Length: 474
Ligand SMILES: [Zn+2]
Ligand SMILES: [Zn+2]
Image 1 (cartoon, rainbow, N blue to C red):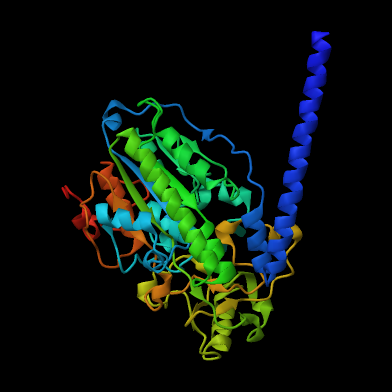
Image 2: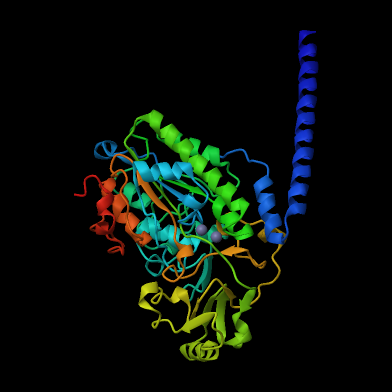
């Protein structure tokens, strides 16, 4: 009888659980509907859906290697590199991000911002930060681009290309660490799901924008509590909230304010967790680019020339069938609008460092203000595509409210935050705006990793640029 009673009890419990789940589902559906009704555009509806989507069950990290830290590496300090996507340099003050302000006091900051590489978009800049190379040198020249030699398109949305190491040039910091016997871990970072030069971070995650932010921080803290031989010394961490809110609602919106406070809280939780561990950890918090409110609707470049001259095109990038065809397109675009300039590849302004890689296309257009350029209107997105990943929200068919990608030298709103604090960083140090390729030699210096003889050649960044924020510059 006891058994029977237990079975009945279990059945009752299952019914109760089912009721609670149903109530939760009805509640969240109602909230979802309310949020969707309040939003004004498809993009804002998509943002509301992302905000209100049910949390997922966190997946465990992928363990790619069980090679322990060498004895030499175990004695070294730790670096956590945090990216708050789309966190403009002046949001900290504008929205009073208390934990970032605390980092600036206890550590170093760049109050007037850090300069992203051109184009100031997500994948090129995340790769520039972890390789010390301009996009044309590491090869990820846009979120989506065509490689004329491979005759293939790389897309941040395509799991096949994102996880294919042959697309990535340079030596990402986690590869550098692993090559020198130091374990590394990535809680999301563009490129971290590929084996680059055949090497992966010891621990990494499959990108999932719904992974709860709190659990990301908890996982990083858990990695730092592994036994010393298994414990990563270089860790990346990524949050997309601020970029998504900026695209959907613009930089001056209450939605950006709340996203800033959300990620700032995660920085607070990370710092509080680290304080308990008593490990020598330097935390670097930065962003890939800023955000600006756009002016006007999409400008379709193919109104000025015939598409038959193109072998391929993606977003703003054009790949002409031949040099002669590139010259024709150039002539047809030149002087047609004050909203963009057009150049032949090989004749781009030097400051953009966007002139040498065939993946950049030819000719190349550069917007002169916060305008929305594209080669042509894409077909309406499929339902699956529309639900895509917020790491790149704002690049669909619907004109966004906020955008980035512009020349940071001529648009201060493209500048990103930079903070660094920990045992190796001078408290209260400040630096004037600097290019993000200089973060790589700073981190390599803190971790005492050798970058003098990289297989992938010399980097574009220089240690001298950020040396003044180090306690021990030598
Ligand atoms: Zn971004
Ligand atoms: Zn974005």
